[in-house]
Image: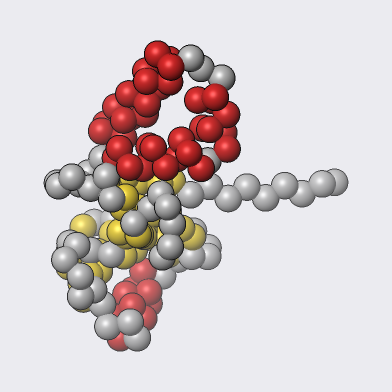
Length: 137
């Protein structure tokens, strides 16, 4: 994965209509191992150091992305690169004086800190996935 903001995808959670069939597929075809089971999910791990990389949840008529967890190198690097390269954030910073830019950067870092699940200096934050389909009638 090549991104100035994100180091990589840490894990993906899927809603699956048939969790047992999905488990068979991911364990037999992808050779993932069951790391943990709960009443509402099966967590599968690969060869990396993370506890799991795929979570299968029951639900829906078709497979759906439930959420994706992204890993960044550091929270500060993520905020600074977001500020430099993501147009809405760039525009927001551009409309502020230096003191308010510093405050906004601090607010963004606090927001990351609130949701950061990393146990080291990296950033590990869940990202919700929303797909909207509009049908014109």
